[in-house]
Length: 291
Ligand SMILES: NC(=O)c1ccc[n+]([C@@H]2O[C@H](COP(=O)([O-])OP(=O)(O)OC[C@H]3O[C@@H](n4cnc5c(N)ncnc54)[C@H](O)[C@@H]3O)[C@@H](O)[C@H]2O)c1
Image (cartoon, rainbow, N blue to C red; front, side, top):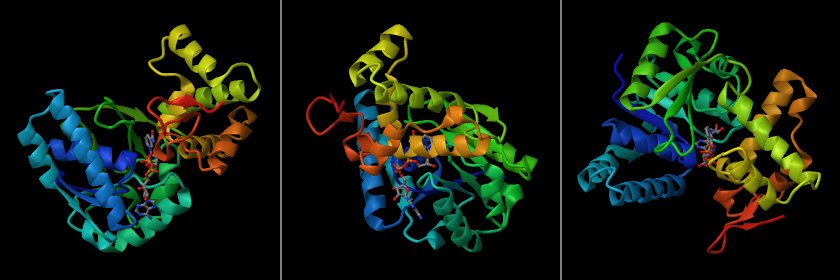
């Protein structure tokens, strides 16, 4: 089955990135979020990001225009019916995702594939909340989607080969590299990355170093392109906490206990870049450490 129309649920940082790369690859995109305002904001972000790509001569002005025209706002899940695949990139919360799938399945054609961009939640369990576990798969893009090469592909227990093949062909069409992960909590990238970020937050919590000291140490001492706290702000602290909770619940090992300081930041609504405050304050010209 060839994928020509992609529905995207969630126009946040991942959803708008997924819509962006699909449209540039020549696919028609239907972009959905809770309300029209959020879809419009997502489209504005896509346009801004594409303008940057034009300025860097990565794409032409004609590419930008054509790609933007391929993305249509889809208000209400019914508008996603023409999709050959729907990629869910809503908030990292199992209940939110399950209720989306419950409402989505009856409006889709039976052959439409459903994929989740979840960072950590069991694909098998999410698939079980749909009417088509054999046509359900995890397609885990990395942030920021237009820049990052890798996509993790995760089969649930019931995922059938044609679903896997069609999803792999889609990732190939986007010019990205697929890595296959088994359906265990947080898959490969986040199973390794998030405990490191959580440990960096413990290092801050225990006063071993300041935000600046920890990030500088890992950038210059481990040659990471960005510090772990800067990366946490970039991912979103709510998403980081959710992934740690999934690891903790799913693997029942205390080494995955989310740091209380991470919990506190999330409770404060300091979620990182997307709310302009996290381990850094982004409201001024330069990010300023908040600790
Ligand atoms: N942030 C990352 O680095 C990253 C990387 C890979 C995967 N992911 C995953 O991608 C997903 C989205 O993360 P994000 O960083 O884009 O979050 P985000 O907060 O930027 O965006 C989430 C969007 O989902 C929308 N939403 C919530 N409930 C909805 C519903 N019922 N129907 C439609 N839209 C709804 C929100 O309005 C918001 O626009 C999560 O599953 C996350 O784990 C995130």
